[in-house]
Image (cartoon, each protein chain N blue to C red):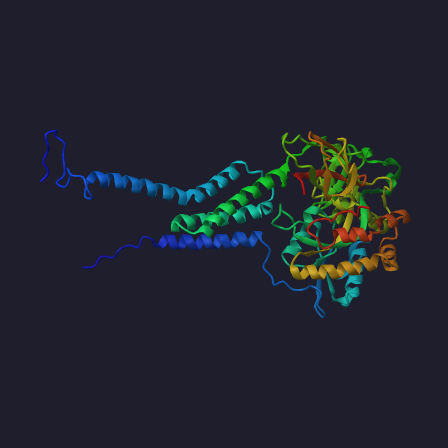
Length: 237
Length: 313
């Protein structure tokens, strides 16, 4: 039965003496073991934390563009995650540890590579009056705003679709072309004749600011057309 | 003593479900094409139902009961013959402009050769922004939009502004009617009739001042009606390019490609000239030359869901 000593502290029946059965030693021993276990658990979950950290960072800094360019990133990150979980559960396995950290690191590198050099969609501003009549010189200006100052991508792919202004009217698409010309100095090719559904890849020549292109329609005199779609993609490949 | 427990689903809910099912059946029946097996149109010994105009001399006309004639029929017969079938297999059936797409979608006809202009909307798949889901073999001829007047009024009209305040007759389901509805032609009065024949009748009876449609069709009327004349200086709107249409299915696409290849040979030979001249003798030589399609046009517009690109050098 527990009683109290003079100091009024509650004591169990088995305390008061030092030795192997000493509760003090037990408490100290338990704490050390607890801290040891805690640190050991932390070490086991560290690769998983790193993987989560890389995934979070990637999401926050996602550059966009087609998913296909992220294949390596996804593959290595998933592998890193799986190995991290396996290592955290088993608590051992140098190969799992190496794979977990290695794959996560490679995933980070793959993401960074895409962020720096991969394809990203850019807004192209179309200026001018539409629809465009074949009887007049139909001209528009296409403007890509200046990208971020640290963006090193040096190529712009422009995909254009010209369509009949009135889809109920006899179609003129097969008789329509356009000339796309770079107004901004240093951008090549300087001028290209394109069909109604086309893609043009431009070398920005190191130019870092806004890019301006001129679009001139060529079609039959009675045709009325629209530049219906313009999609810009910055890339380095 | 037992108590009958009323089912939570009473008899009324069963009837309601049945009524809803019947309504759903009716709605889908009314809005979607009749289901039909996907089979080739071009089968030896099988009749080919051809939707055609019956009131347009020179392009699609029924002179006597069940006796059709016109350039549309001549082209169709030639292509059917070139793919190895008997042109007599063609069974023409009269078709109004506004019913051309529906007749194909509902499998009332196999092909339509009815001065049918190829447009992006007609080529588009049915589930894509109200497209008609049609494949075309064409163009087999091209023509601008024009105006037909009474021959007695020849000196009065030289360009479209001369029709301000006048009445021009058009009919529904045509690119011509759509063109004249545009704001640029606001000052021209429009009278709507059922079809070409009715418009021409109104013109002859002085109920309207002119009829507007594809110039080729108007030349056909001019040849059949000496009191009427085409105004050669008036050409407007986009160039109409006619195609033979079919409802798009995988099997029909194969038929389309066969007919397209036959058309390419047809337009580069003398038969095309012969047929055009025989059926539309009033068409001036210059207009006839302009009307001949190019192989690039045929490649860009045949058997596609959207028009192809122009060749770029």
